Length: 55
Image (cartoon, rainbow, N blue to C red):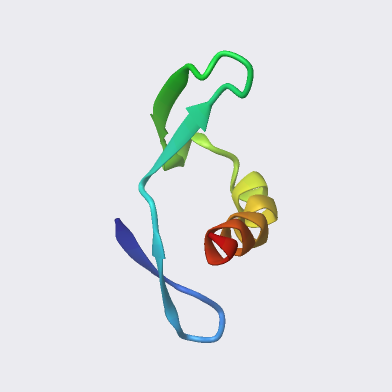
């Protein structure tokens, strides 16, 4: 994992790869985060944070 500085100066941990899991089949693929559009990452970041906080 890498450390990214956010706008408020706080560091947050970011994965350096994305894990894709198909809901229907359960098949999995792993790709580098660099291959994802930054706008999509920013859109999904709060959803993932909420999901991991819920448990």
